[in-house]
Image 1 (cartoon, rainbow, N blue to C red):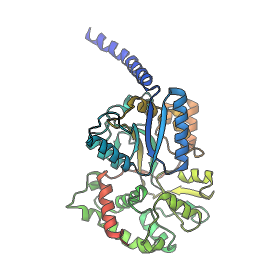
Image 2 (image 1 turned 135 degrees about the vertical axis):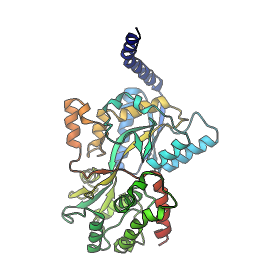
Image 3 (image 1 turned 30 degrees about the horizontal axis):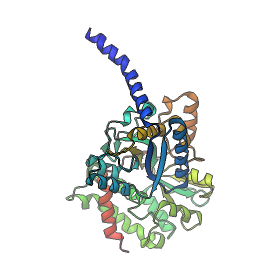
Image 4 (image 1 turned 45 degrees about the vertical axis):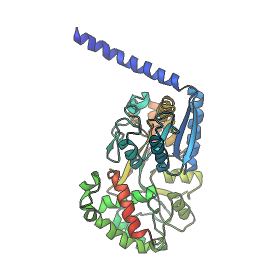
Length: 386
């Protein structure tokens, strides 16, 4: 009798889940969802405008995109609301967050948890990707993935047919092309990722990067990075006394011939920007042979969100094959998908595979989120006052 009851419950559970999702969708109708998202790229902004139109038409959700320069500003707002006792009716319903800010919110228990894997479109997600951890922190269902990323250099084939494929090769390249190489000034996200990339490549204690930095060993773990930068900086644009403020600035400097390399966290970026005309047609992406840092980017729902049902419906739409295919198309955005092509119908699988970059370098795990602040502070102490 017990086994029959268990079997019956197993049969009913998909029906219960379906009924639960229908209830979520019904609750979401006519809700206004405030989505705070990085607004630093026109292609991203156009894509999110398309998402707004789609969820308005299909789910009667009024999706309002708040373009932010730094997710840390949204985190501060969530923290301020918590300190003010605003446990409901918060100003942010959905947030595009990075690992460092996720850690801050999760540790303060300011996020809704255990919801991401209940989304119907989770079944399409490639769980071989790091979709259950963010900067070495378990997500605990508090984040839904919506795009892949990998640190990627950009060059022009006519200028750089054979790109540098290791930190030492980059040093040689910078010496051969003095003043035409640089990186974004930390704490720009991509600039800090460049520091993490070099640290991962150069440190003699890679296991230390999986844990928060230890003040007792920080100097020894990071010493090879600072020795490398001390050699690199005199070879850089403006001899390392100044740095571009963003990857977008580096793109412009690559396009006008000032630089020979740019830097991005999107392996499809060069293709997308060449299509849009923002980079020369011969621009291409590359990485170090041993591998480049990679991650998944996520959306999360604050614990005090005013419209959590609507936020979940939007997060689920972002995982739909249609939304992921459009996002992966360089003519739209060119942001890698988090879906498993094998989970899709034949036509969608073939379309996604055609949009997936080939011959990418291996993906290296990012250091623990606490390394971000530690590296930025030490970099600023050493080089920030030049």
